[in-house]
Image (tube, rainbow, N blue to C red; front, top):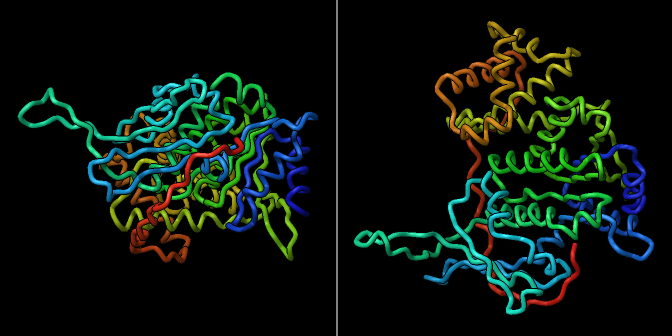
Length: 387
């Protein structure tokens, strides 16, 4: 199939939620464009709203640490979305951003003509001078590539709620991979924002999410198919893989296949365990591994797996794992574990490895990635098409 044919298959699918895993270079962004083209209204206008690589092209970061003393600035290139900016407040974005616990502040810089929306956004720390605590100055700093992605994603989450855009183009959301450059903590939180978006909108519009990140795919698949609210979503969600074979694309369902993303999850857990860096969100990944083993063994509850690996009181431990893997625990109680919870994780994880002899290659934490290149040339603002 071509991207257009795959887009039509998704468009015509009875499921209101479509979660797609795809390897890089398979054409996820092209698929989002094809979906836009196949769902346009008769007058050629967009039927839904999109978040993809083109969405991010509207934003140009002035984030050069060599500019000593200058405040970091995010320029927003003019597009058809600017007319909705007047309904967007800084607090709207902060509400979305708070989950990620940012350590900076920001302020809008509007155009001279308010109808042109937001020209740029400045970012800074606030620091009081030691000899005069009332004297507050704005301090320059460096925003990481992951923090850049998080802010733009939260900007769009807030923009989705502005009257006149998403509510008018109400057929669907198409979200393409908002997690590049994010660490595991923030991927987990981003997954929860996507799940909340699904829960709020799936009954009145289709929600399509594509990703090349196995962790994000696994978390969302687990919440949709086996989570606390699976009974609400299970029959209305399609979980599949976009594959490319001999130049042809296909959407392969995962219901009868063995997904190997559990090996990636085990590697993530092994890295955290080996470095003594286990956090609350790792319990969500641990539960997915237990669920996958239980599914492979043909049993319904992962407490059976806990019993098989030698955990005493498996039902009680299963309840604790369920509680600790709930996203609200992670939000409101923080990501640090108590000594008892960390001990429980270590016990379950080491017993799983001992029982099933998974071959992992992550006993030593992976080295930090090389710093992303700094954007040296910034194009002048120009008119671009909105996503």
